[in-house]
Amino acid sequence: MESVILIPTYNEKENIATVIDKLNTLNLDLDILVIDDNSPDGTAQIVKELQKSNKRLFIIERPGKLGLGTAYVKGFHWALEKGYQYILEMDADLSHNPDDVPRLIEACKNGADLAVGSRYSEGVNVVNWPIKRLLLSYGANKYTRIVTGLPVKDATAGFKCFNQEVLKAIDLSKVKSSGYSFQIEMNFRAWKKGFKITEVPIIFIERSEGLSKMSKNIVYEAVFMVWKLKILSCLGRLD
Image 1 (spheres, helix red, strand yellow):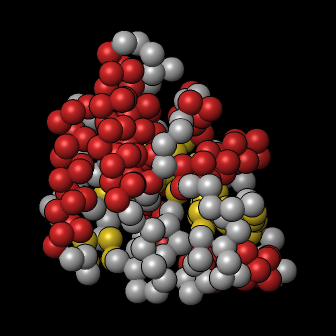
Image 2: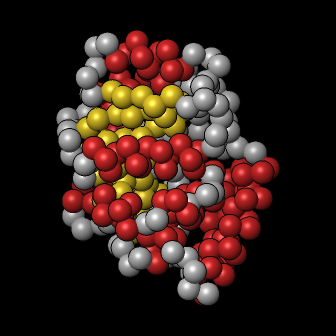
Image 3: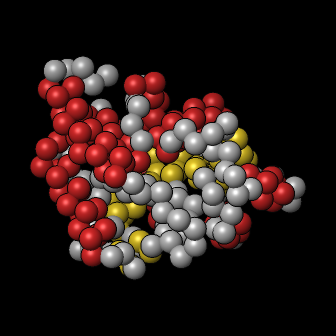
C-alpha cells in the first residue's frame, strides 16, 4: 500500500469509469479512493459496479454535497489510517492527465514533501479555457503569492502528491476551506511547517464532459482566505 489517489466526485458519471480505467493501466502500487457526495446522476453506483472486478478501488459515500475541502480531509484521514506513504489528489473530470501521476510520486520519492502538478511553473500550460477563466486563475495565484509569500506559482492546483508526514503534521481539524482556497490553505500550512514543495509541470486540459463546479462563492472564499492565513500566521495562531 504505497500510494493512494483521492478523487472527490459529484455528478461525474461521464468521466469516472474512464479515469479509473486509465489509473489502473499505470504500472504503480496505487489504490484509488472515490469520495462521492451522493451524486444524483449515479456516480457512486458506477464505482461500486467497478469494485466487483477491482480490489484496489474504494469508495466513501457521503450524504450530500458537503464541499471539496471536507471531502479531501475525509480522504486524508482514511488514507493515514490505512498507512499509505504517498497520498494524491486528482479531479475526476480528466483535466488532470493520469499519466502524470507517476511523475508526482517520483518527485516525492526524490525529496519533495509535497509535489504540485503545476499549470504555471513553466509558462502557462492550460488548454481550452476561455481567456476570462485563465486570467482569473493566473491572477488568483499571483495574488496569493503577493499576499502570503507562498513560493508556489500554482497554489490553487488540485493535482498533487503528499508525503504522509505532511498530513500528519497538519491539524486537519482546523482546515475548513473548500475549492481554490482549500488548495491554497494546504500548501500554505505545509510551507509554514517547513516542508519542501516542488512544482511538477503539467498540461491542464479543460473537461470535455460534465459541468464545471466553479462558482463566484469559491472565488470569493479564496480572496479572503489568503488574508486569513497571513493574519493567523503573523499572530502565531495558524496551528
